[in-house]
Amino acid sequence: AQNAQQLHERIQSSSMDAKLEALKDLANYSRDVTFAQEFINLDGISLLTQMVESGTERYQKLQKIMKPCFGDMLSFTLTAFVELMDHGIVSWDTFSVAFIKKIASYVNKFASDISILQRSLAILESMVLNSHDLYQKVAQEITIGQLIPHLQGTDQEIQTYTIAVINALFLKAPDDKRQEMANILAQKQLRSIILTHVIRAQRAINNEMAHQLYVLQVLTFNLLEDRMMTKMDPQDQAQRDIIFELRRIAFDAESEPSSSGGSMEKRKSMYTRDYKKLGFINHVNPAMDFTQTPPGMLALDNMLYFAKHHQDAYIRIVLENSSREDKHECPFGRSSIELTKMLCEILKVGELPSETCNDFHPMFFTHDRSFEEFFCICIQLLNKTWKEMRATSEDFNKVMQVVKEQIMRALTTKPSSLDQFKSKLQNLSYTEILKIRQSERMNQEDFQSRPILELKEKIQPEILELIKQQRLNRLVEGTCFRKLNSRRRQ
Image (cartoon, rainbow, N blue to C red; front, side, top):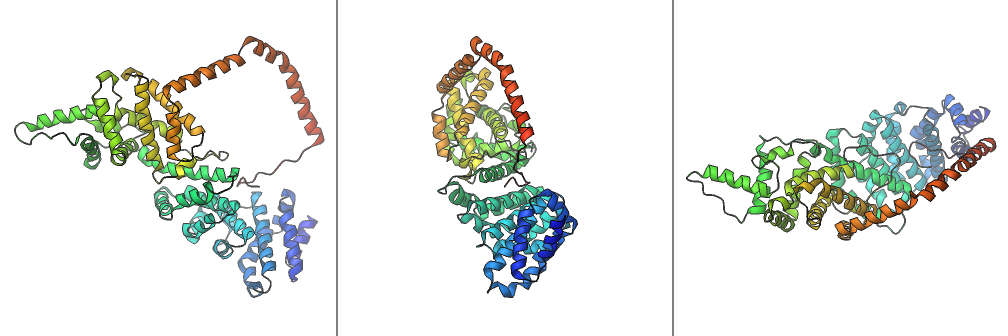
């Protein structure tokens, strides 16, 4: 308590040197929760915010002659503030617009001062994540355009904090604003900047950066949730036109029936035949195939993207299957719907990002339409695997299980591009999957053999006793644990 009181007085000293030394000490002591509580009880947070809001102006004149001193003073002030707030004692809702404006201004003003920039970004992230009111105020003060230059530098910690702020703004944005923000990110070429300056930079990606990239990946894919949960309206002509377009692209060369003389029945018959060739379950009204959610309209979006952007592959798959015997055809429509649903499950579309996961995939940062391209690769894989398995319609679920295993195994290798992902899948044929399964089964059987199980049973009590003693020794000796703060960074 005495220490807190002394520092509270020292940081208000009129001597620059004394003030600087006091702020340096405060930045160190603030990590301790007991000290933090005492300092906060003295209204220390308000004092620091006042120093940030008004104190900086007082030193503007000194800035030119005492720039290092000014920079250090501000850095220690912000560090102390971050450490004190990390204890969760004070609510974030208590801060003024003037304070927010000042912190936001530092992101631009002190771009060359790493420590001030880092603390300012950390404060903005915490404000957005911890208070809805502050989210709105920060969103008004800081733009994506102001943040992006910090990603183009070489300091990975600054890049990490910058992506963390973007993620926080993305996460807390209202549903109607989220797509708008995604469009801004696309306009500012965020994906390609991250790919060039972060993912393909000549240095290893640390765990915290990997976590922030994972969060961005999840939030980006979650934009698909709306389409995934939207049922098709069979009465909506614009939606029905998409199905007509799929038919037109696949069978364009075939002549349409003439419009005269009983043509309506003939046309209906032709459409039904074509929808059967396209692999829909409901040949008469394929719109009904898209009324299940998930995957809803997202499946139809994927099919149209494939038909338009990979037209040759689309036509080949449809015509190839329509010329097979009925029981051996791989139904494109049904496959696309089930595959879209599976890919959404694999990528956990619609789920909030985990606080501990850092499982990002570089290949999803290589294309603006990465989910659609992912689908296009996987639908061709499904068709290939169907042929390799010589599957019939009764084997549909079995084929889907194998395809899921192929995709999951290829993803675990973390391909750096979609082309690399495609080549990984080429090496994971159905025959190769069977070999891997057999090998894993044999290894599993080795560990489950009787001698191994008997040995495990025999030594288990001894191991448990050893663990118990080790835990008791730790309790007796005492130990120091790292503090994990709300941003996971140390």
